[in-house]
Amino acid sequence: MLERLLRDVDREVAAVLDAALDGRELSAHQAARLLRAEGAALFALLRAADVARAEDRGDDVSFVICRNINFTNVCYVGCSFCGFSRHREDVDAYDHSVESVLEKARDAVQRGATEVCIQGGIHPAKDHRHYREILVAIKSAFPELHIHAFSPEEIDFGQRKSGMALRDYLAWLRDAGLGTIPGTAAEILDDQVRKIVSPKKLGSARWVEIVETAHAVGLRSSATLMYGHIETPDHVANHLVLLRDLQKRTGGFTEFVPLGFIHQKNALFNHLNARPGASLMEDLRIIAVARLVLRPGIPNIQMSWVKLGPKLAQMALLCGANDFGGTLMEESVSRESGADHGENLPAEQMRRLIREVGRIPVQRSTTYEIVRRFDDPAADPPSLEPSAQRALAGPARWRTRRKPPAAIATGY
Ligand code: SF4
Image 1 (cartoon, protein in one colour):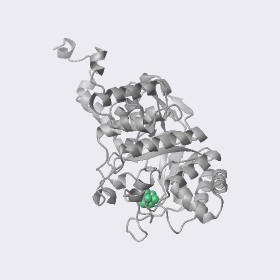
Image 2 (spheres, protein in one colour):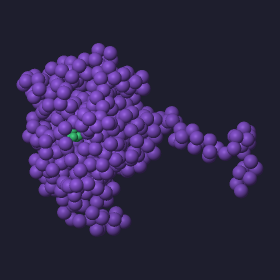
Image 3 (cartoon, protein in one colour):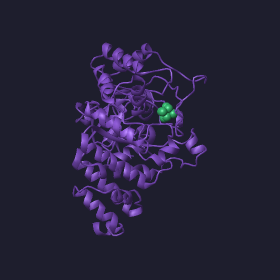
Image 4 (cartoon, helix red, strand yellow):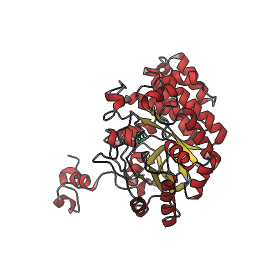
């Protein structure tokens, strides 16, 4: 029976999957082959990634209770995929004060957050002192709160304004309370692609330099990739191998997060002929290939529920992902580009979504220490919204009966 199921799987793909499951390191060429898998080979890839996930991380699915804070959307870098940035004179431009950022951090703590994720546009009137002020204000008020902040682009901007050496600048931020940095601004680490998607942003080599130096001073980071626009499977494969090699040198990546391109409201799709984001199969294929290429050095593969939506996020958990990401509470970068999956996914709903695919919800810290496990399904929150439960329960007079109606009791 199993042989019949596997009969149509392309032999080359089957050999690469065998190698990955045997723990052998895949080449960029092999990764690119998997990224082109279709039909039976694609389903074999997804299944192989799920097996690798079970070997690498077991059945736990982790999540973090966090709040996103975007302190300004003013930015003149002009990335073609960005629907978030505004110029200062735009009516919907904003620039939150440090006090206002602190207020959002306070709200996050009251809602159970262990982390705030802080990023903003590259506001020309700001400098390194502003970044540090934010850190000091939050850390003074909430010493236990983990601050995950400032993309490599923001680090590049602040460091150049400060005149400090990169290593000293990062250590200066760390000493002010910075805990980890987001590995965003990576998009595709290929300068030909970057010329189109982010021509004025830092180049690939500078991104690697900043992340590697951050890891060296004890600031771990996530690793990201943006796909579904103008990139080819070879670009993605090279990007994954670059991250894997960097991880071998530093061990500083906490997780890998593939981010699907949201196309609706930006120049990259509307004027530069990019694809309108990834297909469903492409979303799953990237998760699966990341699992197989990045193991064992980067064992946590996170999917972005903001980009995928909750149902596809559940599917990603069956194709190699083991992390649900953060609750976010507030999200504007994807929303401003056209994403419509909301900006807050409460921890209770995450637990339900995880349980529905037969896995164990685990609340984690930013750096993957376990905060709380939810082993017992009996302690889960109800699986339906209260209004839906009431509707299913029927009219109030039914609910007050001690015995079910006779027709139900007799099976008719
Ligand atoms: S992606 Fe970041 S750096 Fe680029 S335009 Fe948008 S806010 Fe600015």
